[in-house]
Image (tube, rainbow, N blue to C red; front, top):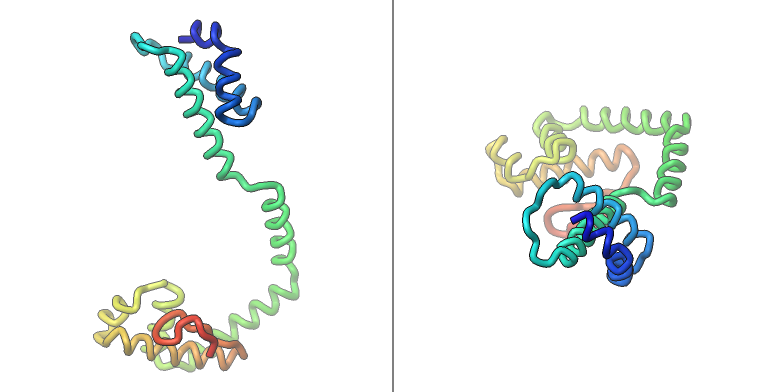
Length: 173
């Protein structure tokens, strides 16, 4: 196989370049194909070795593109870096801690069941049906309890509630 690749390298690279739209990607795919052939060992008789190598190189190129698509771009990295710079601002940290303390106070003012429903739904991301089973109530009652808890907490924190469940979901209240 290596001999076939070496003998038809230019023709195969040109064919890959046309198919992939990039000479650099075609060249990299062929180099990786050459390495893979060395790792494969004996593959036995191949009826159309040029087609086999072409398909192998296309698969290598597809693997490379998938791997590259998972990496962050330079702009994304820069955005994250700036977000992290802002996240470490002492004033923002103090404000966040104060807000968490206010939320804890608001939660402690709720009835034990309402507080538990709130925490299960919003912190543990439990489904309303599962919460209803746990407390022996209807899913509609879970929604009512959760709505009361959200209203109370939003009032204490001076925020608007955006409903994500029940009638009127996604509306500000």
